[in-house]
Image 1 (cartoon, rainbow, N blue to C red):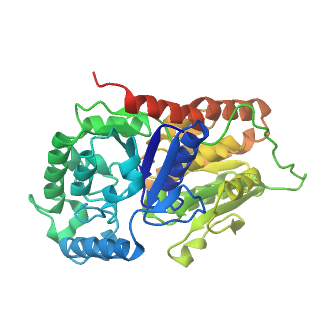
Image 2 (image 1 turned 60 degrees about the horizontal axis):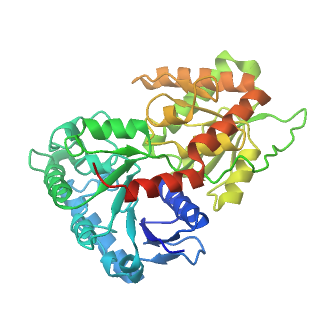
Image 3 (image 1 turned 135 degrees about the vertical axis):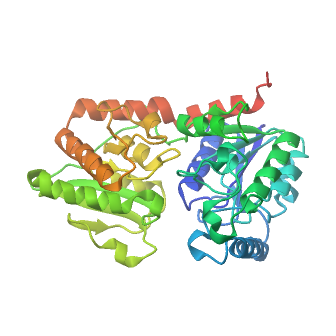
Length: 421
């Protein structure tokens, strides 16, 4: 392994962005690259993952930045983790793995891992550096998902997430200015994990005019890998699986999903009587585990590829009810293991699902009840196509073609070391 690369990510296995970064690191190792990963939270037992600094230093940086956000947002706990100013960070550029690397890949590095000044320090090492964008943070002042706000098209300011402390020169505008300065001075390349995210970058005042390349998240699958669905008994229900790091994160659309299931039981009772709901991940508020109109089984947080694979292979339909998805990793995972994917046509889902060929893209509507009805129609369509072996074959071939981990690894390496035009 001659080529050495380093991935920087706040965690290796907590959250979608961390998991796909870890997969990409492993994929590079599989093609002969000496790839390693530095994190603030290590959950795997991989010898190629290390803490970026001593643990006590990590907590200090995290708490100091959260305190600043808390003060700047008017002491509002509800938005405390929805924004990141990147004012505090850790000296990851001093780690020997960074010093030895030929190239650097930044993933999700917020919440006190990397400050904007720290990114500048990394750029001064004069190594090719690629920032893989998993959400909108690089193109906004401080938020990860702009939602209906259009401030990122200008220079931010008057940020709705700062409540009574918002203003023309608030934290969001000041961070926007710091990002613009960094982007002008540092030699950076940006990758968007979906076409939707790349379009958002093009709309933004920070990244408009940049050559943002779309390279999807990797999935560890090959066309030669054997594929065996677990056999279903004649009385087994059709199982719908829904997963997220935090299932009741407002962005994930849990209330819309619950309403969609209620619509099914009301309008399609014959189908609904033969359905079961399966969830995995965590609930911040335990009471949110209740309220499903279908029989519901919660698997808790899943750790490791084998546990994830087994969960999907027990199910038939994978659903995403998110307001928007930068990518939609659970849809890819489910599709790879034979679950028909259903989601909204409102984000990166379009890169994953070919409508009514490899899954169902429900129309988007700003009104939640309308969204629920459309999602219900998609779930019922998927229910009626469970067992369609031709579609299951297309689904798997689509994942291999678009998201093969080795192919993604080769693409991002080529992008890293190709001269700019």
